[in-house]
Length: 420
Image (cartoon, rainbow, N blue to C red; front, side, top):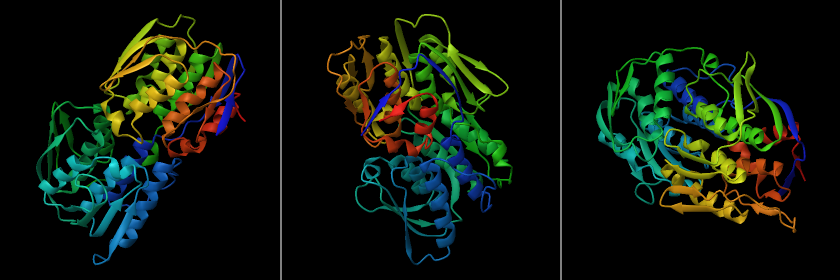
């Protein structure tokens, strides 16, 4: 447990955010499917991307012996689980892909059903629909037409998409139901196209032609992580005055989370793009009294935005949160539990969150309130910023931030935050 304080009225800092793990993990898979061995000069800087890179090296070295099962343990990296499940289906060898106890509770059946419909050899070892999965890879796997539920995770769709160009005959993915996180599907399409793939995503259909990936300079494509920028928007919203430069962020981005400027203008933060990056300052305008938002396109921003609204006393209604139930933890319940613990008015109805607009009133007893992280990096970072408004914030497991933002606490120290 670490207590956090920050008594500064003016935050002035320059921050270099981690690389987008969503982009890096896709590029690592595309690079592998292109036949290249490594991405020169690219050094993954979050736990998830390091895990992906390390496991790709294991797969490369062990794929030559199809008689021995190789265990691929992704830990708690959900993106890695989904992307590698698809990759292993076309990689010669016998594999068992697994992860932490929580990972073994996260569904993967829509993806495996689609792969099996193409002829992939996959068998669930314990609970049907959940890891661990035994896979016998087939580099000659044929493509074709598949149907996929688009309402659980866009990562299932992205995993299949990246296989498309190397499948015999390509692939047509028919998306069923509500399409969530479509911005991530568009991200995958954009990155594949930069690697020479012929990808068409229109309406409820993704069409990908068989065509070899070309080797390109992936380092020219990688961007800083917009979802990590959300916590600096919180800092700017909570302080009296701010000048926060986020190095390297630009208005042109393949990341859906680049909607942050549009969201936080309602919460008192101005965003200006400069030659160096994105400058956050106070807008000088009052925060809105009520803010409602649909996070279907950007679910990774939900925790930071909802915590911001709760702390500022903004009444709110938030939808598009269904996928939060199957993340590192049940993020909807985690938000309800911790916001309630801290004295904010919050209610949950099905997969929607309501804020009453009740502001925190200073209490006489300033003993720390321990914010539980639930092994979720975004819980730790979203709640840490509250130290600008109150002196009782303690984070149960601060090291969990390494999953996506290893330098978070160092950067927070630059902004005057003290971990006691």
